[in-house]
Image (cartoon, rainbow, N blue to C red; front, side):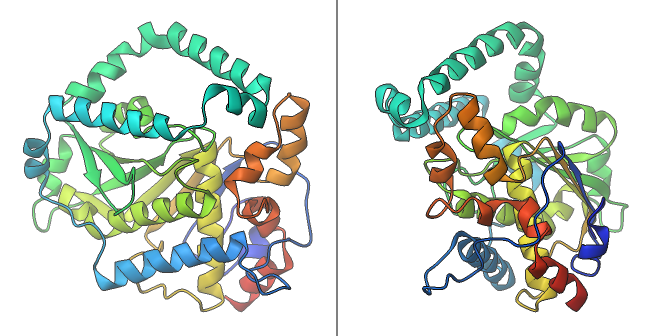
Length: 348
């Protein structure tokens, strides 16, 4: 079920889930472009997203997803030097794939460069206050770093384990609640370490946080990003009991671009289940989710595009993220307002 004004439309589609969306008022639609197959028989963005969701389901059902080691083994496997070396190598590889500065200006507009400069200045200003979280990320023994959850680039997660998790790992012990954190970053940047402050607060509350990385553009487009988040949720479902977590008491928390991708995953997966296209009994079923909290996400990319242009950004930025520039097909708000979603809810 989806909380808010669309609750009636979604009834039955994802009955065990609650999606809470924090977003400015957006325009409504009765129809959505980008149906799973185009009139010409071609592949659309929605069909690509659904293909990735099915791939995750098949891997989960076959047991081919990444398996977890014991927490103690993970701590011994990665030293601080390893973590820094891997982080530098990963950053170098990703920066190397980005378009050079001059073409970037031509593609995204001069304003994009100015926004990057402003972001850099802002990061420098908040650095003194953030240093304790930087220190905590690298040296706090309660954080298990760089656990692989899938076969793709950037398929890593961190696990924040409160003291209570040690007892919760014992057979028969009560498991701890779990939060899966998906950060934002305008689809082109972001790192799971951005969840550190959030994770430290959850540690104090006795809650396990799983902070997730996913492929950014240009390494991947929207379908690949959705695939990665789906794989991370499937990994948590299959492995979190090893760390003392309860797979049936899990909340997905996502922000900005992460909220957009998570909303798209939840809605498409729910619709596929309602239409009988996804087996809810498989490992990657999201039935264990108690809630989905999405904060500051852009849910209608068609409506967002004129705003970016008005701010001086080239519209190519959003088109490049999708398949064939189909912004409607990667807009969760439009899917939620569509006749297909309404009919899917009635079938569920």
